[in-house]
Image (cartoon, rainbow, N blue to C red; front, side, top):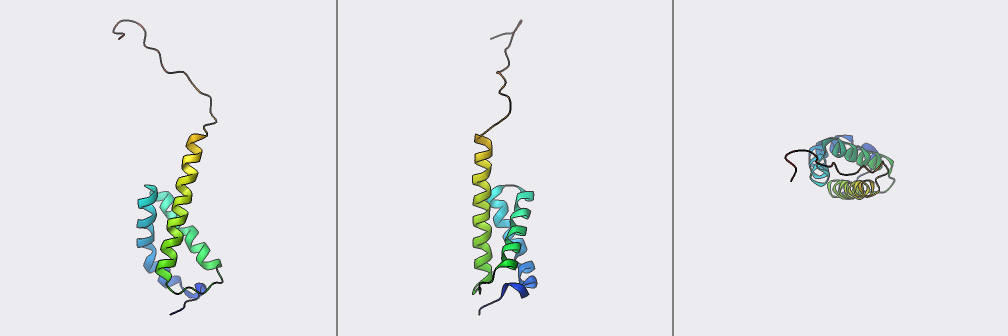
Amino acid sequence: MVVRAGDRTDEFEALRPRLQAVAYRLTGSVADAEDIVQDAWLRLYSTTAEIEDLAAWLTTVVSRLGLDRLRSAVYRRETYVGEWLPEPVVTGPGRR
């Protein structure tokens, strides 16, 4: 069965818990998972392609968006732009 994206709100809502679970397992963040699922909805809504298996298509989209989010997070952590502060120095009695 081939489905069109524009008429699939009910199917999407039925799949939303599964998609959020996949996104959460990838990111570990509820907020990121919700954002990823919303982005998947926007991609579904804007696609003109015919989708044979909606659940598989959405799961793939959510997985790829989650991986993109993780790559982005790694990049953001590796490129710290703040002021680097020295490690605290222990002084006084009890110093080891």
